[in-house]
Length: 179
Image 1 (spheres, rainbow, N blue to C red):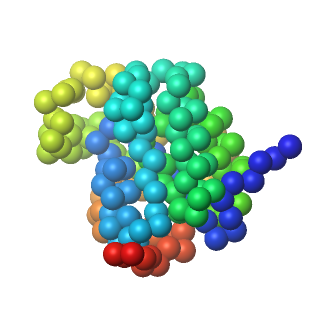
Image 2 (image 1 turned 90 degrees about the vertical axis):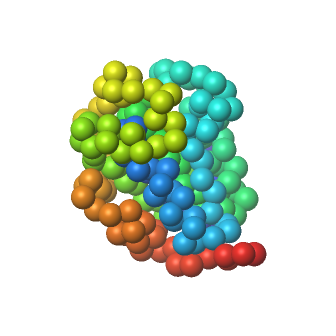
């Protein structure tokens, strides 16, 4: 039996890509423009901060991401799920979220080269926490979800252009800023 989450009016946005590709910046940019009523379910927050878990197949964070996104959608929030979200670890969970969501779902993959990822990483506050060796281990070239029409965002598209594109695709105009 299919479980329906959210409503016909809710939006589910999946933003995936390698480390330092801009996923969190895009999610923050969308929220800044939209305002209240939009939840960000960040893989790093749930996996690294809440659970302090390594990214492994079958990890507890996969279910926590799923349940958190479902909860947000069921409580009237448009929801962005963002993270590296490897296709082989998270694909089944993301497929179930897409299948069960009653509203519009938009999927994006940030295509940033390893060299550009390193350059962007050097500008982040947590740059000293890990470096090129770890990022090389994590990096997967164009790790697209099988059977999903993910819009591939090229590295040369600006943050502003990308935020505008995602909001337009999702049908998200300015929300309830300040409410």
